[in-house]
Length: 109
Image (cartoon, rainbow, N blue to C red; front, side):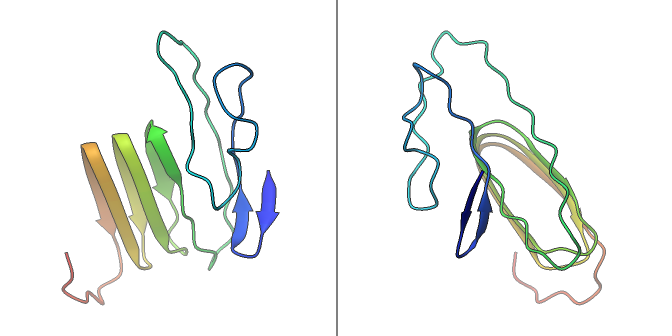
């Protein structure tokens, strides 16, 4: 866990497959998972009104945060989110399932 001006960063560093300095807000994760069976699952509790910004290269993101904004990104994976606050999600190879309970819609897709 790394605390910075923008919040808190959670990262996983595995000996032999990731750079030790890759867990910082300014770094792009650098991991070689070729022929690896490593799986990491985080359970994060987010207080109401705190924006949740999960990022992963290979993996799924599930966020059920009715009182927090969500901005989620995965390269290869699925994003499932539910919120009553502003939300955005980006996937390169995967899918997005979003439940937005706020009736104030800006019209942006």
